[in-house]
Structure formats: structure tokens, C-alpha cells
Length: 467
Image (cartoon, rainbow, N blue to C red; front, side, top):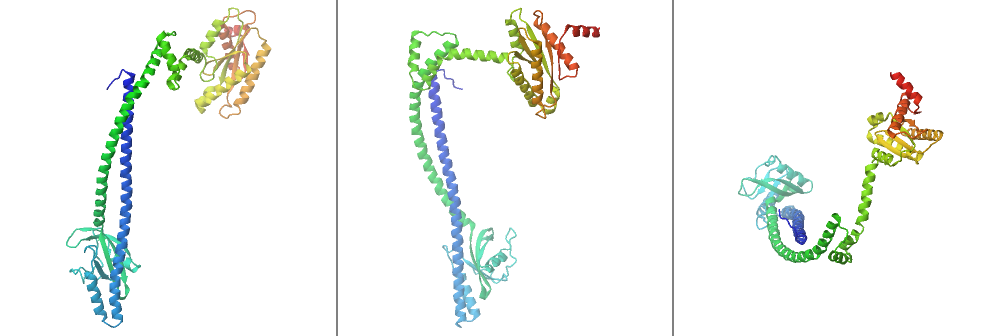
């Protein structure tokens, strides 16, 4: 694969490639459109030709019918007998030709007895049971169409002097006084030959069109190549300047030398995208810092709920002074696994989102942390009033359960909580977390959907029971 180190070479080759591809597409579309149009026109031409053939067959059959009618009228005037009139009519029709001698007529009685068939040995024979290779009783079909007022039949029949049956279209009409069925037809291959001639003319025309189009495309491509070289030179220089500056920024070089500064100032005066890119570089440092802070925020907050995560909680505790008084409330959703198992994780995620929103409303002044799964932690700093904290917790629990009960998938959910206070003096955060977890466990053991407050008496009692 070819590799281009120069931006100018790459741009030039890209423009040449695009122009070449465009020329190929245009040429292909043009040829494809011409072919499709030819197919459409050929289909219409064949349809018109078949219609004209049918009109000609119908007209020729009526001509033969008129000849027989004239003989019949001579009979009616008494000029000839019926037998003489029928013989004269048969002789006249037998000798009638059209289409440069290829078109001829036949006469059969309505019982299938042949009267006229080019004077061959088939005349005078009964053909009512004659079939073509496809099993079509074509004489019966011809009689049926004639008695219905005239119509077309399609069957297989050999040409004069041949044995192989070929597809044929036949028109028949009845001459009632003699009980005759007069008909004439054409073989389908005659239509096919005319279509082939028309197709050949189209192919010849397409060859000439393709040569002319190819010549035009070559000339256009030559013009595009020259434009590509010129445009590549025009675009490559400012891109090279901008790339050099961006590399310097990537290396931490914020101060430009005199030459680079002059080049960038010139570039920033452009009204196109390159000028906009140059002006945007001055904002890059600010955006880099903003993106860095965004990444840091994503690393310190839970993606689903937007609450602080364990990492943020750890950093928060480290930033607090040693004498900070903490109050911790550990929260845990009851029956959360049942919701996930029965209704799916999307319903479970919805439950967590609802809890986070209600928690932020009730404890807007606290640090609200999602510790993982369905476990949450509320962190209050400074001295607090127990009654106020517990009243807010109760309000939170009531509001949360009220929201859950509005959804059939969440109505089984409740929340349990454990509170740990640091009343007299500051306690290490890990000790307080252990206390709040013990209080939460006590709430779970008490039947869930309630809260418990950690006390040393309950802790001592628990340790005694364990012993």
C-alpha cells in the first residue's frame, strides 16, 4: 500500500481519487440509465409491435372473409351454385398472400374439417383433435374464438416445409353461412427477428455513446488532476502550520517562537475552517482544564444516580479536619433483589434513581453517597439535632415508599436505615461506619422498613449474646 508522508501529496491523491471515483460513478450511472431506458423502450416497442401484428392479422382475416362474402353474394344472386361459390371462395383464399408472401390463410369447418391449407395434403382431413407439443387442441381453440366473434389463439405449429413446431399467434373469424372458420397468423420468431434488429441498432449506438462519453471523462479527469494539484498546495501549507502548533501544545509548549506566532496570526485571519481552527487553539488550554475536571467528576460520582461514590467519600473524609463531628446514616433497599429478578435491571435502576432523587431533596445539605448496589450513605458534618435528623429520615422513608407504591413493579420495596452519631467527641470514620452498619443490621432484624440508632448499650448486649 502506498504511503505519503507529505500532507500535500495525500490531499492531491485524495482529490484525484474522489474525482476519478466520481467520473466512474457518473459513467456507470449514465450507461446503466441508458441500458434501463433501452429495456423500457424495447418492452414498449415489442408491445406496440405485437399490437400492430394483431391489428394486421385481424384486418387480413377480415379481408379474406370479404372475399368469401363476395362469392356468397354471387350465389345469393343466382349467378353460381352453392358448391361453385364455395369452391371459388376456397381457391381465392388459398392463393391469397401478404407480408412478402409469408402470410397465408386457412379455412376449416366448424367441425374441424380442413378446407384450405396451402393446397397441401392436409386439406380435406379432419383436424378437430389436432394437438401441439404442449397438448393444446388448437383447432378447437380457433373454432371457439371464431364463434365468439373472432379472437386470437396461441399454439405451436411448424412452418411450411419444416417439421419443428414453433410458437404462433393466430386470428380466426367465422363465416356462418358456410360454417367456415377463416384464419391467419404469424410465427413469434418473426417478431423476435425484428426485435433483434432493433436491439443491434441500440448496441451499436451505445458503443458510440460510450466512446464519446469515455473521451469526455478522460478530458474532465485531466482538468480535475490539475485542480487537485493546485488545491493540495493551497490547503497543505496552513494544515502543516496548524499541525506543528498542535504538536507543540501536546508537548506542553505554550509559548510560540516569532516565526510560528507570525504564521498562526496569518492563519487566524482566514475566514474558512482553518482560520476557525487557529482561533480555537487559544481556547484549548481552558477546554483541556475543563475536560480534566469533568473526567475527575466522572471518577468521583456514580454514573447511574449522580451521587458521590466511595472514592469521593474517601477524599471528602481526608479533607476534613481531625475534630470534624460526623453523623452517618446507612441505607439499604429491602427486597431489591426480588425486583431485579422479577422485573429486570431496568426496573431496578429506576428504583435506585428514585431513591437518589428523594434523598437529595430530603438531605440537600449532606453528602449523599452510593456505596454500591442498593447501599447508600448519608454523611452529615457538625453538631446535629437528633430529633431533626430522625424526623428528616422518617420523612424520606415515607416519601420514598409513597413513590414506589405508585408503580406495580416497585410497590414491594421498602428501605431500612441505621444511624450513628458522634455526640461527645469526634470518632474515626471507620468506627462510625461500623456503628451505622450495626444499626442498619438491627433495623433489618427488626422486620425492615424502619430505622435504628446505634447505642453502646445495644452493642454491649449484642456482644454478650454472641458470647
